[in-house]
Image 1: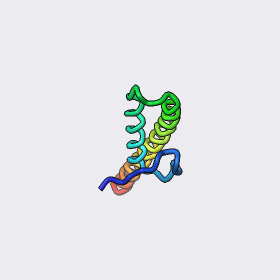
Image 2 (image 1 turned 135 degrees about the vertical axis):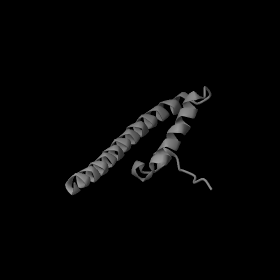
Image 3 (image 1 turned 120 degrees about the vertical axis):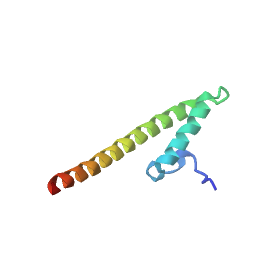
Image 4 (image 1 turned 120 degrees about the horizontal axis):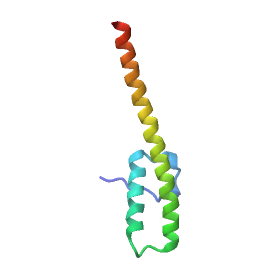
Length: 82
């Protein structure tokens, strides 16, 4: 069963998972592609989309650092044992 997510602005950004943020960004992109979307909604969507992209990028960089550190730790342990 798919979880229903409240509108992005109605909840704390920190509470959304990475996957939920990607889903919201996909929804925004679909609306931006729809020529019937009201111009005021488009402006709001662009702002929210930009914020989502920043948050997703920050999370990806954080995870990349964690993974790199974990592999470095493994490599250091192997070097110490040799």
